[in-house]
Image (cartoon, rainbow, N blue to C red):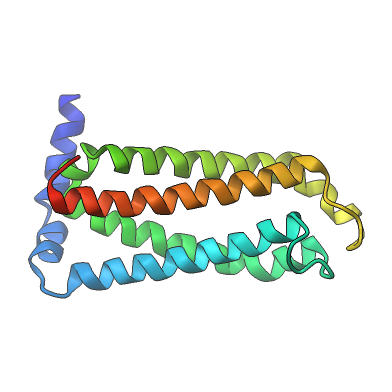
Length: 169
């Protein structure tokens, strides 16, 4: 545990973290990029999830929609990760001790596992179905779980900011 604390403290005091924290504009700009990237990423994921549930884009093949949307999702995810890491290093020790932050990371891991299981076990068969065929129930469950996880991730992400602002972990 001492090694983790030492690593976090070294991040807190790194030149990049200090310059972001001391800048009047750097953190708000990075946070804005983070929010925009998350909005784009969650929006594109929601498009695919709603298609799986048959609530949107029902006339379009899932595979075609995925091909069009997924590059945006991955670019936005990359932007969210980079901006999130830049925000994290400015107060790494405090973030690490924040319960809402740890819950958010756990939920992100679950969302990734959900996506991986979906891709490996369910989506591969989607290419063989025509656009009118119904998505099997495991695909619908994965979509509902994805939506629920992303709502929870946003909730705990906002909770992180709120608890950090008030000094409550």
